[in-house]
Length: 429
Ligand code: DC
Figure (tube, rainbow, N blue to C red):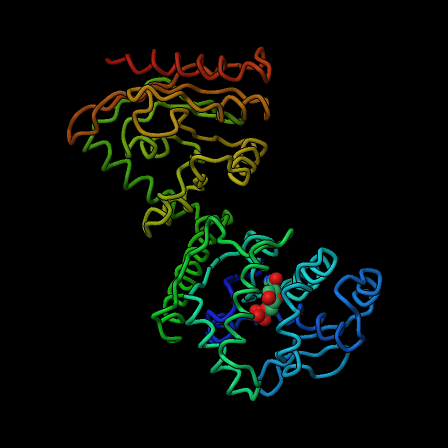
């Protein structure tokens, strides 16, 4: 999967410079999307095509060849085989480009090209609509802004360095017009994406902006790395089985001493079942897993996997990480696979600790999967405080057949599971 950094913002905010530095720092392919619109504009000027000559523009778009290449450490732009890196920054192009980029056909064609340029690569792209339209799922979204006068001053200095002649006032007017145009486009208008980080660079040096964005990129990369680790399915091996056995013996002995665990009822020796229990404490899932002769693949919120030791234990016991407050299709698939393999799946229908006490509606996941995989649910009532040396009761009920319910009765099926669990929590010696 490729990694996409999107940097949007109006002209003169330093996007180009910052993007170039970041692309080198993070080894990302730099795609200057503005350059693609500039190439179309230059091609139109070269061929004397007016802004209203749509047929000619469409023909030009069919034939145009734009390439962004890196040669001797420099980013070069080629239009139909010619190096136009400097020409596309000319006054004539700058004055017309915003209007050209507003033509629907030009936009669709260039967005297509930009997506193709990024295909399968780790990229950093700067423009106006990258985080909102070209790559709305970009990993990092930045909106770089600055005051109009400051932007005009920067562009003036930049042009002077490149030998492009344009007065400060000309630039100011040009940027003002472009801002208006860019913000009012039919497709891909310049706007702040809802999930973008806004950076106002008016009083910031390039170095400061680079540092701020670098921190955001690094944070995101670490998050992705962690997500990969959390969701990695670790294969069953003899060594894993052996370590699991040892850990089970050690931890269950500690549990027996600390909580005097008392178990009634049991789980069938083989076959797929969903174990559904009440959830009163962080320690109760482990109690079910440790005192079961068979492996119970427990569904656990993904935050639990962010701690080193818990992640290790989670992978050892094949716990299934689940994203909360959304439909986690990946987790659902893994649960169904466990059942298909004839194994045990553990779920807390309450969804969170003490859900019943908090009057929360139980989740339908267990009932849904029982129906989908055509397996029975084993209700479990846990009773106790998990205070040291107090008694904890784990009461297994008879397997429940939910096949009489249909898809529309999922709530009812969940209610029945919860009722059976509640009854089992009342059992003591
Ligand atoms: O970033 P730049 O000045 O080189 O961009 C040139 C023009 O292209 C600018 O007026 C806005 C337009 N553009 C766009 O509409 N969408 C993009 N993703 C990039 C640039």
